[in-house]
Length: 481
Image (tube, rainbow, N blue to C red; front, side, top):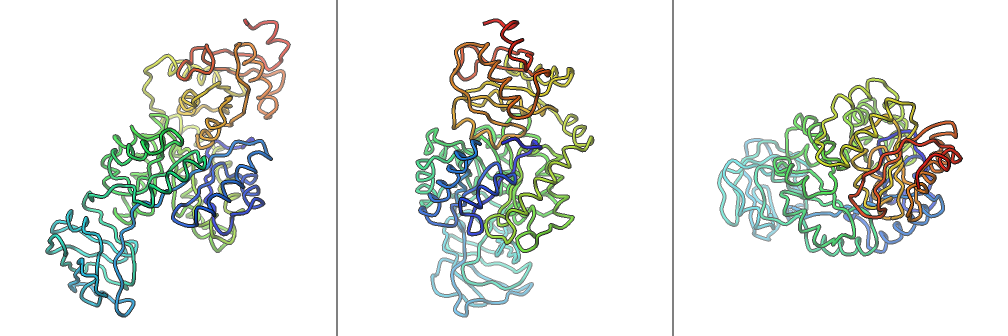
């Protein structure tokens, strides 16, 4: 399904959007990727949504990526005798391993690994950072704290520990079960929560065993510090600004977002900007101006995708939220300033023949009157390299691998078209011309750029660039076999 924009839209499914009819409507409105949140819903619910997405894909003949988002370890306080307590600035408060109900002076924190890592001066953040505690004294089973920001603390509220790397694996027992379930189901991407170090990603990759690509969620300060190493072993990245904004000063998040996007662009790995992008549209059919500006900023920075969470999963206006994102993207990408920013921030290391070919493809397309770049790919690597160049013209990924087409639905500027396996380059050029015409990118009087690797269907063999006419008669009379 042709889009009039290059940035992709990820929509989270949930109670407001879990039917075939709604999923189809959201895809037609602009959703390119559907996120299944493994924190909510049973495996049966996830299976039903997966089945519905695949039916929409079949009915519309439009490859769709499915992203399964693993929950990750959840750190929470225990319960209070009164259900909740009020903590005030300057008071002392203790967290320990004692399972007794809490009171105004203490509560259980049933995570011994936190106490193992804590040191004096570290902070514990409760309820999305609304309550801030500074550790004054700690041991293997307790932490005596001073309240730096007070408020209501109640049963099972979440805890963030921003100052230390916790001796916790990114995958809990639930996550391992969910990962195996989702990989066996046939999702295209697995989003890994609570990433602190590259070893967390490698563990998930080993368990996935090639059945899905691994996307690392950057939501902890330790992940920001280790980002280069994490990016190297990841297939993609999500800038999860919600937890980042809890564990770091809020003013630190925009520069981090910009920096991470540029690093992902440099290596050609897709990056998603997520969390609270159109938060008010959970309850309102119209976004705030600040939210529109936030979405636009991510697009100007060159992100591959922007994501809706509760807006599409549980909100009252899921279709309007997707439509709004689509409209913002279309208008931003028409702005000449967008092109100037994208091209000024292009920073690519060229280390292979394929790098040179895709760079040449972009330059030729932008220098001549070329309508589209058509890339034949089996693994998606070449297409990712073309997208990394951020060309002004659209990109068509031609592949016989359904899984590759689906995964590329997350990549900037790429429209995926299924093609049969090929043996001759001339037939590849003909197929590319047909796809360009069928998708409305070019007419018979236009020219296209075609990249491919010969022999076909072998990853990493991109070695041909051809400027070709869209008129098949000219292809047959001028192109080599």
